[in-house]
Image 1 (cartoon, rainbow, N blue to C red):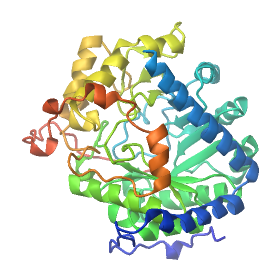
Image 2 (image 1 turned 45 degrees about the vertical axis):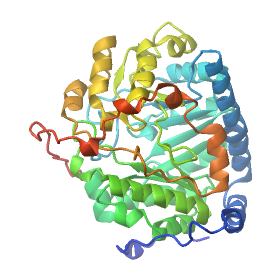
Image 3 (image 1 turned 90 degrees about the vertical axis):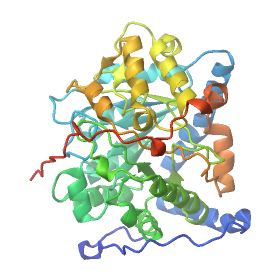
Image 4 (image 1 turned 120 degrees about the vertical axis):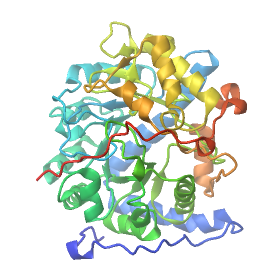
Length: 461
């Protein structure tokens, strides 16, 4: 297995190539050999103990947590089956479009508070937690957190710069962690996107250390105009497979935060291109491809609106999702999480109001709804900079994953089955969505660009 990546080999062919295969091919016959290759990769290239823990904690127990979520909804109760925790605001990079206060004084969720939160979620049947930052590995007790909960599974969103062989070996010993390492393009694009020189080489070094230690390694990309031609292509996915990466995740760039850089946002056509690429890659390449924005039929959804997941920020605030930095409750409140999630009027109204108006991303399409909710519930700005309301007023509405009439269903029978059971809208849009209230951002007159901040990203040496 070749995991090395010579510096002089890090080039891209800018011609966009579509995946081979046609819509009238028989998917099952085409996919079976591919899934056998994927199974062989997992069996040979990863630690068997880690693979078994992933299958049990993330697979079996993860499906059970979704089942419990469905049962709760039938009883009129609510608790998200998956939680994301941003454990620290600090980061060594300054990425375009970042919504986190990475330049503010460091603040982190203390280990005791994180443990309490996870224990309360485990009591509700949860077995999977996403760990974000800032840069999570800057939290000095992060590995202690993983070791304290061997019965659940963690996915760490990281730039990979702090994953040394020593750290990777300790993660392998834990056995319940998968690093999801972000790559944002070629060397020049990465440096520009992430506000620092030499970012890509350090990230690749982190990937190599994780692969050497036989971790289940993922690579994610926030797809934008500057990297779509480099990374949304077969050649990039093939490179990931060569390196020993087991799964990949293509996010859509969201122009939010203090420096949103809206010029990087994808057009509707480009977003459809990414969706088609994801669907095709799932059916043809021996690598898992994650997305969080569509069901099996290609209908758009938002995991926060469906109640699939909510987010806890570095200060402990309970938010709808990482990019919506508004809250009325906190993990530090005296009320148990079970009661907080079940009784929060702000979170309930967020899910219902958003679902009435769009199947897409509310912060991209309807920031006015968030301002309305904040005013109704007295929601606080959960940032250190204290300018979220102003930022929302300055957002230029644009289409997100919701592309009415252009839905692209899953080609892969495995993904279709998995999504039908475990990743759908759980009846949310069927109950609340009102087509008459949808405003297509592509059909709306643009707002004035006055007041939109220009990017002045520093290059750190």
